Length: 442
Image (cartoon, rainbow, N blue to C red; front, top):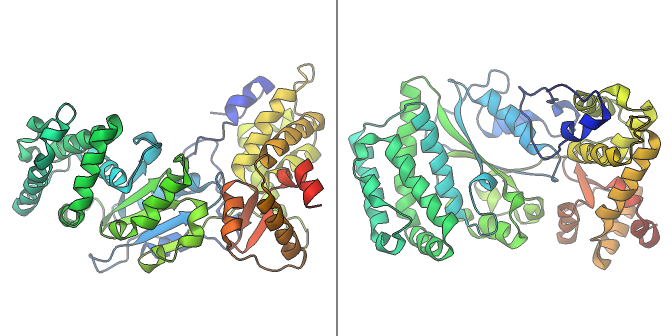
């Protein structure tokens, strides 16, 4: 899609919730304006050459886990789409992108649900590629898998249909059907989902062993057929669970089970869990994905960042729909370097456009900013005020900001943004101009 040429088209062009891929007209590569964070960090962690995108790991049993965190709207999923495009090749990975919010109940989710959906997506992909496993030992593992689930067959009748699972020689099609049925159980019935989850958790080591055997057989087949060197999962969408308690339970209480599934995996990690990543670091790499820094600690604008965000904006909205360069820069400034916030500012500005003018002028922009400032500051608490005062003092003295529990909550609520390596934190510019911030923090 081309950029909006009329103000009535802007609303559709700036939809901020939809990540883009490198093939999309709206895509802009922002890699070179994220400071210390480089794509090479991810490639290196996965054992991949950062220029040839070849998988360099010589030990087939060495797997890599990455946990990627960052402010909502910083552009993680769009950047992940770029990594997938580079990594998905015969010398590297067969990439399986699992967006859990599209296949699971985000109001009621556990890690076992994620595993089920993860394997459903895998077997669906292999079935589409017409990849089958004819290894006798693997078929034995599959038989054990089916027989184990039959232990709870009577308790799951009406949803789970074991008669579909008789002929294991149908390979990926049968495995795909099995995991579709298991996902149906966990998304259609609370009572039956509890039965299935408890069954899997009780026998998790058994299931992990079977899963790992099948995964390695798939990796061997991919290498033999020159399709890829390894499987690579990206599991995204945890931020969309309804409660922080659910997110914490998945990662902090299930980290040992996560490490038992031996496959290269990148998880997007909810930002409020960054303070608790000690456990995850025992078997994986943890990175903060930063917003785009617009100015140095001394207040000097970073022009390369402004130019990149201008490019992102003009891919969606024609430059002629703005009254001046001043309006454009002001919109970018108040985004705080968050691509999604920039698009939200423009989207809201369309509500205040004078139809006779048909452009976003500075008056419409200021009304948008005022409205969003009130929204951004409405959930500030008394404890937040104390942390914001402390943050202001630290930044005034150019002191790096450490990760405190209270600071993580500010990040989760989009009151504070992270930059560079995560030690550079600044208040969301929309919050700074709110009446609450100006009165209580100054």
